[in-house]
Image 1: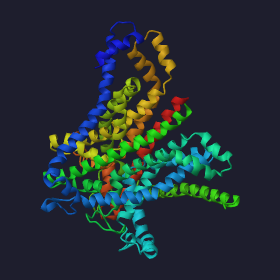
Image 2 (image 1 turned 135 degrees about the horizontal axis):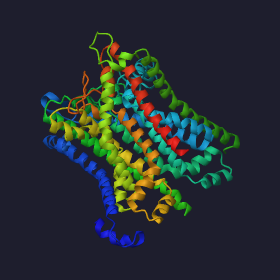
Image 3 (image 1 turned 90 degrees about the vertical axis):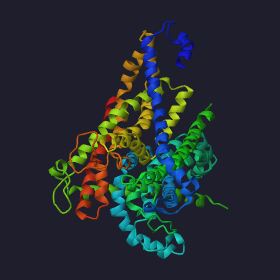
Length: 323
Length: 278
């Protein structure tokens, strides 16, 4: 393919003489570029290879819908882990989204540039802290805090909801959701800032010139323009929350059950892989865990593709307006 | 219906709420850093850096082998991941304005969102199963797979920052394409690429999940690539979830060391970037 294209390009770049080192350089670069595709192919192939037989053994629908995970009897149902992953990620999004968007708005629309440059450092710091350290903090700071003042208080005030009932153990969905919220906050914030910066100044100025207050200008012209990008940022945050392993493993309680209350211990897809894979009791167990990973992989890839397309669309928006 | 005063009030309330978001975001960061420093500092000693872990109940001991193991595994990851990641990035910047380039770029973006634990299973299948044992090599492969997509994207961006005039000047002087790329474009972008490498090494050093069932753990020193190897992150995890108080203290001290390692790598990256800008 490259060889076929070469003659077309030759006249504009160099005299019609075959330049061997140039070809070697081009070919080498192409190989390195293809390495990314090879890596992607290897990921898919290995997951299917290890996890595929286990899924087929149980049946796809049964695997996803069965809520019993009993290693000793070779019964593998993924539902408790899917449920735990979804619940903790939902809690994380509910907590992180308003804070991230508020923070992004504050930094792009309200705060003076000096504040922005000072604050960008701690936010990047938040993104750089290893997840096992978040887990450590969650286990020894957040969980005790939830056990005593927070969860009893929630039970007293909002206890009529099934979400906030049951014994305040500390370890559980709520703890995992809060840690996840802290971890995805910098992700959502930084992409939201990027998106907000592409909103053309004229939109803002138009609203302000018509007598809108700053908040009204944000609500009427900035947010609608940035909506697709912020949704994309949220989806990237969600992708990170779904796949986050260590911090969740350390605070979710590791109990393969399905409970309505956020106070109860649960389990998540990455957490069960982290806890059981190294000591898996046979090919079927290993395979079932790899199948969970395959599921996780598929979901995050779909989410990422959708999110990237959305962020890309909203990034391209302003250039079209300008042109 | 909406008086000006009311609208102004709403404006200030919303501004206040957004400023509050900043405070809310900083609370966990401050709390986490404070606890890691205050609880971790007490356990710091020379032997903590040089000794191997002590059994339960015995005083002393350290995480020297885990620190060495992290550096070893990350070193293996660099040897595999840096050439591939940087190379793919150079390809995207130099030859990437094609359909194929777009596809590779998009896949690299999507791959950078794949959970690290999934990558751990891939490395398990690639290395652990054929070798029939957990090994530093498997851990290195896992981290390398994680490094490639992000490194490719950041390298591309940095190479693209090199002004076109430089490239054109070189080509106009009759320098062939490959020498222009290597000696002019890449040399100009070198500082930025160094920064990107250091940041991705910092990220890789903090990974735990993909190491749990690739390099596993080891209570002793190990310098063989085909043997299970300790790492700082896995050690923190094991200490933290253990039932012993003195091990919890060790988890905090190890976390302090890990933060110092990751932080100094990131800081070095920033310094390289700054020096190059001048």
